[in-house]
Image (cartoon, rainbow, N blue to C red; front, side, top):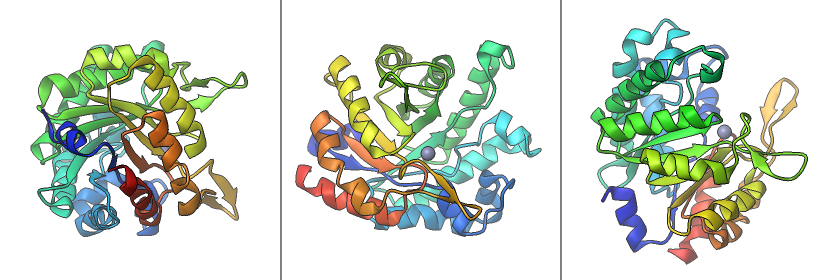
Length: 295
Ligand SMILES: [Zn+2]
């Protein structure tokens, strides 16, 4: 049994970290710049983000590797550095997390669409294998396949990580509320459809990330729990739907507002709660406080 499942046996709930992109931008990441190149060029800044979340109380921190797959890095001419960039990402978060806290190696979508024939299943598998092995090599305890919309891509990423590393595997997809009030990914996948596929592919923990904010996550957790009574659920919600104000992206949900949903999320069956876009160490600090009574 891996570190997260082990900890969940002792504590019913755990906390995770918040946004990385938001903090990298605050530290000077320019629009159009490759965020993952900072693992090589600005390692101290990257490590500091993980350290901020750890000192805010998070039990786990992600790595700066969301776009660290072959296809995304190729866009920047960095496809030869997949292994180096991802290994470094995990090493930096591990340094900040110490031995006790958990490091989640972040794996995002490739941006290539299987259904359109832009990429083959084999090529996707190879890209996710290469990335997750490097994250494991750098010291990640778990691989978190996240922000997925296509069920096939999510399944292949989970399989690649599961079959080639000894890490625990987490998979979260991004759901939006439809006009009829149901939750679906951009590619039309519901939480209920996601569960058996991702579970069979080897995921230990499933859930949802990004999206419109924390409120809708309660319904998503309920839907997952209705289908699977056992599997741990991880939620990384955005701080609301982003607004554009004076050329800047603003996330409306305050730390207090997000933390106020913790009881509903835990009540619905969530086990690990952190944040996605727009969340900060302040959000995580209040979420950790709110989780204390359930630990
Ligand atoms: Zn997000």
